[in-house]
Length: 446
Image (cartoon, rainbow, N blue to C red):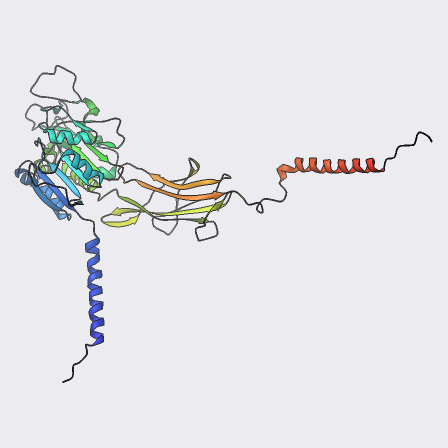
């Protein structure tokens, strides 16, 4: 009985099929993860804020709902982070459960995680301590933002359900979007931001007629926040580009405010508030769907050459090129800007100029300049920081040496006086030598 050897062509076909299947699955595996932990005070919030959560799920986020005091809570396991984003809709929590604490959430942000936190006038110690970790402070318990001029007609009479003009939003379309026309409804606490923290952004502030105080008590002292100093929504982008958003109103994200009509006292009415549009833009920003930049393909070489040299010589002409891209709808596209600046630095910048786009190449920029007549260790440096965008930083170190002795000009025009003095001295010595050697004194005896 003959045993037939396996067909070699069948093995090749199987191999190629496996390669095709694995390559088709590769984009799925390489997509950024959207695992999100959602902490709630009670499960009723899942129903009262269903529009917000449904929008995230439709956008591909995997939401894990847990109670804020769950003793099994943990953001990482065996040193691996389990989630990329954290939503904290538990303003009444005094202490987070499990391994969670304000310090662990701060560590989560230090490792690139993004956080969205909603407070309230009855916020517990956990939310207040967490806000303090990022330079934000919630106003005193039971203190509401009050506005006796800009309030909704359906308000209970305490004027705590205020209307906020979209013009009070931060001037950054990347963060707040561009379609905010209807007034915003806000009922909650105010935020106090640390003015010494340059990373904190005042995303939404109240009107100049607003203040923050307990509506049940007479005003006996000056309110903590008054007018445009009353911050309603604050954001923070850490130096590692992790993002955090704080607001003093959980009600701001509710289904009721999303669909509620707005009529300012004595003003125009709108069929729907602008809360849903703003919340959508904020969630896209805080979870890094918008405003994400990257820098790649940094090259530099001498003019007329293609390869990067080992070192440069003073006064040589240099070309520096770099690719800038922006994440748009999950796809990296060329970033268009006219304010990206390149510096050629040796302790202090010796050259500073704007990068210019290369025609026909999306997102590709270049700079051309002459190396200064100073030698040492230099850096091609880009430090691009714009409101709402991730930070772009790049530093490429190069050496610049002086001219070799064979590279100097044979005769330098500026040294002609020295040449003349040297030659005049030579001629003078020659004449003196001739006179000294050929002069003969007469003998006195003669």
